[in-house]
Length: 389
Image (cartoon, rainbow, N blue to C red; front, side, top):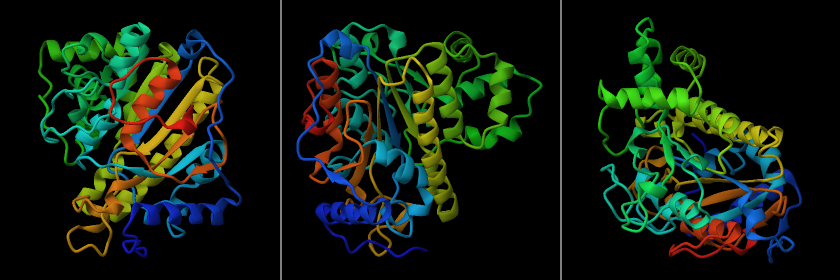
């Protein structure tokens, strides 16, 4: 097992170490001090922009990513994506370190405090609701693709002034696949059982029912993704993971509906909770490859090329190997600096390239930043990230 960075006890020390590792690997990097602002644009022009947010459910430690011994696992992030974007080396999550509630905090811009193990709508309005209500966008313009079934309520809040009327459509690949397998009598579900298993430490969700619920999911396959049941099942058979299936669905949405705001959660690496280090590292490598594939999809699609900002960030980190209160890569229970200090990479036509931002930001800062850039108001408690305007 790789050498632990657990001696780094502060977010600032972790940030500085990431910066040094990156400089040693990819050479000269500029340090951002002032934002690179766009020339004057109208709000109408900015609404034509596309936004994609990718979160890593479960997070990944520096030992397996940005540290010298881990960089072999993220060649695409290091050598393809980072040189094209702005890297934030110190992103703090000061909230609850549970995957659903942490992701809900990211998309509301406020630290949520509800029980991570109960599938409930966030009490604060989400980015998707702010976007649709503020810019009067249709329901088909914003989607969430989440491998974990526990994310079924992430698309909209319980706030009295917002709610599902303004929310995002939520696609749960595992539910789509379960419905498709049920409908396709000739298919052997055993071959796809690994894709139907849910992530660890996730909220409980209502199991797929045999009646209207299944029909709604099958209708989504046909109407939103324009896929037949047989085509979808056949594609699922050719994929290696739930994250692969999610990228496939993202590609279909981009081709069929070209939504302007999407969030995608990659959750394979949460297999770390099972104690399998090799599968955890394999999932990191897969997420690295899929992020590069997604950016290539953006660059080769006329609807998205030169109009899209992509944000990539873990929801939080994991415990250090030498922390007696934790279990190393396996969990994120200590609440220490290693678990709370993560990073973000932002790519887009208006952003600086090959740049590191070393001062601290918080994971809840993204929502007000996107709102400020696209021209809609939010009630987030986060702050605007000036380097992203």
